[in-house]
Length: 235
Image (cartoon, rainbow, N blue to C red; front, side, top):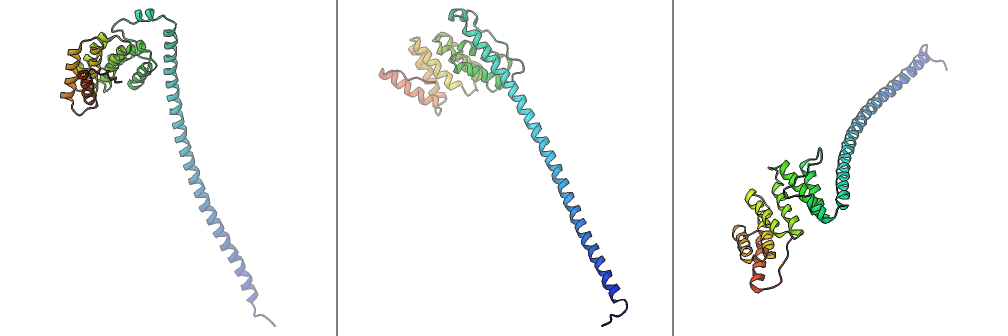
């Protein structure tokens, strides 16, 4: 059988065209894949930069926290080498310890509160006074003043405790620690056997802050005073 002239030529020409189309499709797909890969690589680089920045900030924060810990530990070690009488002599009334360099208000407050929780009341008093001196209008200023009173109360310095708790009432009348200050002042007065003043302070809490936790405690304490029962404690 003989093929018409040109039939074989036409068939062989169709093959290269098919191959060309296939190659173009492969190249097109490869280009699309390359674009997607480049986009993903750019996104990875962006995310890596964000992670690096976050890690840098965390490292800086850890350095500052460690510096604070070192200062607290160093002060505690020095304080621990002194006898109680010597330590008291080193902390005159109203003494103000210089705040740690670069410390934020919350860092300084937390450092003072940590000292209080560790039973290092003289050091805590100094740091709380430092906080009040440096940030007199801060939201935690009344709290700092209150904990100064608590430090003296814990040291059984009840006269000083009464004075410091009264400062909370006088200097921060709108503060959230006023009810508690009245109650702890009353307990300090009871320790000094100034029963009438203590009762007056408890009654003030009940009348001025009737729905507060401090008022509930004050009612209980007044009832115990009237019944002659063992005093309740409040922290």
